[in-house]
Length: 121
Image (cartoon, rainbow, N blue to C red; front, side, top):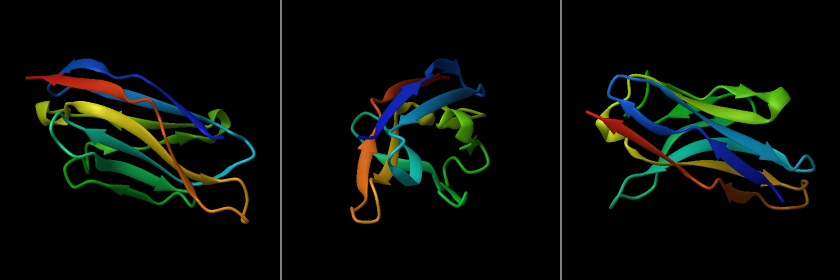
């Protein structure tokens, strides 16, 4: 089983920065993609940023140039560095991972517990 434990988040003024962390466990699993999603009240969950096992990244147009998704392989942790935050970034942020036990298994989606980010204007 893969577990994703999130930390970080909170309240910040517009223009400020926050960093979210997603610590992964489950050493017997292979992870091919980790991402951050967010969901604002009344809205659908949307992809914010993702990183593949080869290091390639993708970002939503709304956060490109402001957010990055660095990782720390030694700590099995992926971060979401959020700069120049805007009130419209306010949402619950979720860590997501696509993993499998071995090549004999299909890829399974795993989610973190979610963390609130509120950007005050």
